[in-house]
Image 1 (spheres, rainbow, N blue to C red):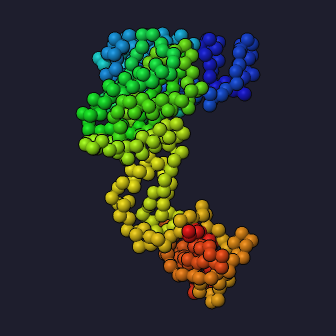
Image 2 (spheres, rainbow, N blue to C red; image 1 turned 90 degrees about the horizontal axis):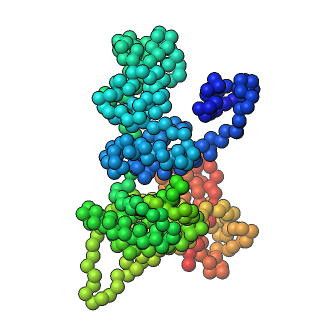
Image 3 (cartoon, helix red, strand yellow; image 1 turned 45 degrees about the vertical axis):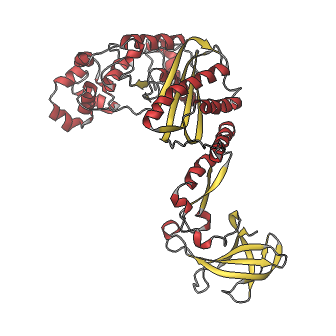
Length: 475
């Protein structure tokens, strides 16, 4: 049993991470021990990261106990960097967290100052002065590298700055100087956000919290109206929308809805969220109210504007997309699925079932409507295929001839007519060069039922004994 984390009070007793629990209790008999739960810690950190979306969409995880926020262009919305830091500190402290915050011109400098006791707000001109007194461990170096640097007398960043670069690089590698240059802004260091950035976003900060779903939906409709102008300027419509609802106590709800066609109509966007909220009614707990609502466009496509019919006829395509959107919002996008043709002559790979909202788009492509693979055999394929071909026992007059009878699921069937064979070569780029071909037969038994059987393998090849399988049924 070893210590994995400490609070500041425990550190004052000289305890350290990795220390044995028995030794720690000998040092501090009143030590309060809680069993570690890394999964719960990560879930809590993710929840705090979601809450930080109120300040910037560029939120990244920094280890197991930190967050990195890129507030470039966002600080003025909160009255400047100092006011933003004060707001973050005040809110998180009210939630019960002990927070260390620093704002700097580079991610490395901000991280070093927040974790090793540097100033809170550092200007670009003050970067060297703020970083110099900190230990070299603040540069995110490996523990072994920190120990090696300490052995030669390099314990602080100021000592590393004064040392000549070529000997340091030859002895300790490029990491020390690279981290130093990144912290001082001489080398770039991007932040990888934990979520994809939305294409468009609109939000409303509320002076008084709202409590009901109707109020949330009303704000969603108003925010959609604000995004409509931006979508029109881009000549696009939204395909995937995300509604973020920030609760007063820090809980964040994310609600996504998709559209089968590019969408701008605010009434339809509101209706989609209404359908979704009707399913999440019990999960969307308002608590003490919601203080911030944001609507994001995560995916957009070119909007094909169509003029309404002069005679007043309704667009059937519009009704279909509206129906699919409502079903997908209420039951999920995989509630309705349609077969979509694929570029393969192998029956198992010739089609796939895709969500109806995506399948309609795929079927509208010219390549899907003029599929050269399916055209020569149209009408010769069964209406229904088994999920997996099932092996059958076949009797035939000659080894490589059509079957005379077959046994499937303990039922013996006598064949009255047979057509074939139709040979399909395997896709060597998928199955390999040694995969056997198939000879397909369309057969009809004495009861009038029609089946699609195939023989896998060739009799002229003595290495493999051919095997028969049932794959589908004709009408």
